Length: 188
Image (tube, rainbow, N blue to C red; front, side):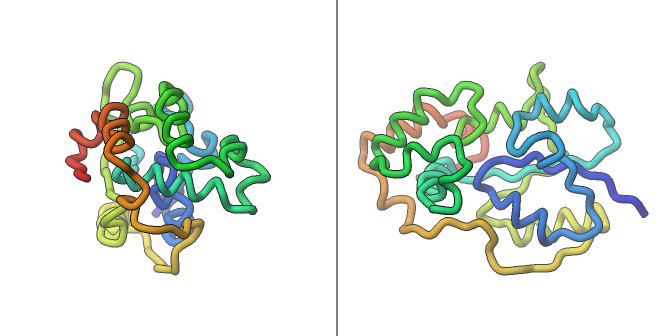
């Protein structure tokens, strides 16, 4: 059986891990359409409504810290567009990404990556980074693909995300990323 599926690659949600552990599933939606492009690229490139589409989300507070630590890695600094922020404080980083999010795929609101231009929610299945293991198993059940569990891939090393924020920075995230905090019922 030829399984067809698209993974909408939301940054810092384990996209690379899923590409390397899910077997028998054509994960065409990540590199084929450009890594972490908004969903408009996906819908314009493949309008086939029979394909199974999935994506993963992550608590924006945690996602931002993950992205911040990720761009500080020496192996990432060579190619990442945010590498110039490698020596910035988390406050400086958050101020920058919170003012440029509109249409910016890395750490911008997930609405740009999960909804079409006409407001239609694209994924058939929405997993959570926080429950990735069980969500991968469910996607495999729905599609018939296999799963070869591995250690983390492409993970950043860091402290708990709550240690990065003060009350003002927390309010910034709630203001800018409040839509998905509410939509996906994420809390501090």
